[in-house]
Length: 142
Picture 1 (cartoon, rainbow, N blue to C red):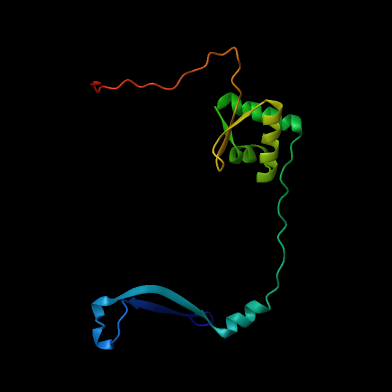
Picture 2 (cartoon, rainbow, N blue to C red; picture 1 turned 180 degrees about the horizontal axis):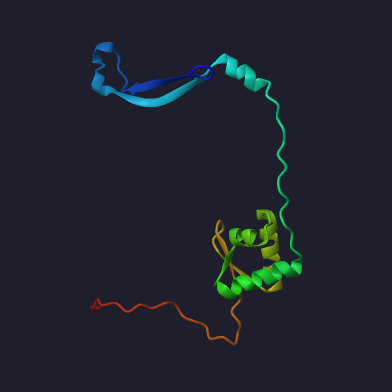
């Protein structure tokens, strides 16, 4: 492509010791390669760069974050770090720190796995504890 560079195809085959062993059936497509032309490289080396200003995230007060968390928990059984981040427009670090604070206060309980934490409301002592989910089977026990 004029002014940009050119494309080429690379091939692969099984290892051979003698070129007589190489047959067209054993040669296969491997990849498409792009080689940039020198004039484009020269233009890119001298191109002006500028930083794009990122839009500031909206910050909420602690009371507003708590209210938003309660609103979400009224409608869902649990919340994740990712959902808390999107709910309050904060970073991963901030979300984890604030959720850990809610756990320390007793507002939430942490569960799940190391890589996928979920936060739920603590079960009050007045509520009856639910047992494991039991599904009746149509298979006769022997």
